[in-house]
Image 1 (cartoon, one colour):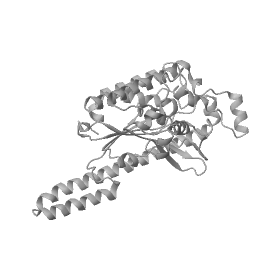
Image 2: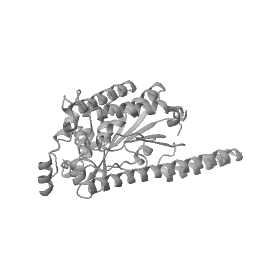
Image 3: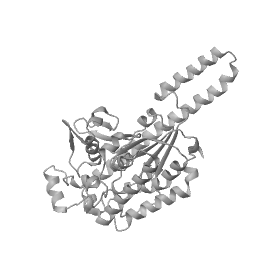
Image 4: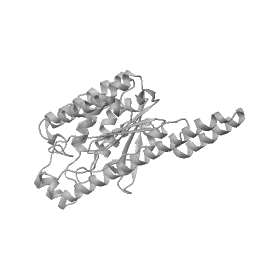
Length: 350
């Protein structure tokens, strides 16, 4: 199993609204395996709902705490299921139309904070102090509303270490989907959901295995929008999701190209080095390959890179970005856990 040789693992969480519950199922299959083999997680990154999931795990300071934080995260998702779709998306048709006409978001954003602090959903409130003290790097991906560019807030940023509550604002901002929720002010700037992931920061952190949890189908085909909001804004909904998925695919493809190039450099070094008898020449060869790796990814100590994306394979038509039917959330958690357990060796050997 290749993952047994991993020095440091990164887990990156994509966006997907209520489908983000799938990430809990995948984690239930993967985390116990990593913990039992003493394979450390060095990096967590999240976009949109993935920022919420990654943020909860980042409270952990030990491997065993990771498993505890996963149980707390699952409890939050099951509480969401118990409270119903309006627990996060309390959509009202007439209010949506009026707000749309007046160029206002459909919702006030309070429910996003509830996911972190309301005991009806999050039994144990989000602890920003633990996040900044964590040994795991946490990156939150979001967009600067004034420029439209992706920005990253990290628990390693000095201003966040000084004021940990900023990380909670960053998570809520990352979850604040345009149209649905208002932008979040942090300092003088407004931020919101950017939707897509990136891998470069995990590579820079020295992770040689990157597991990417993407709660949608790999082929990128979207379900026909159903329900009032989807029909009214089908074009926006579809184009937004398609753009995010395409950006995710681009980042994964780029990561895989880097992984292939690393492998080529490593093999060349193994083949050429034994042919050089003089120690000084060997050192020169080693330095050449080290510099080659720096050009690739700013981390010369990384000699292998594995990119492992996971997608939803079976999806309920009633489980969408902002709505679900009774049993959908617990079902997708269970299904994704079973998928990982069934294919764990294959997944970790990709």
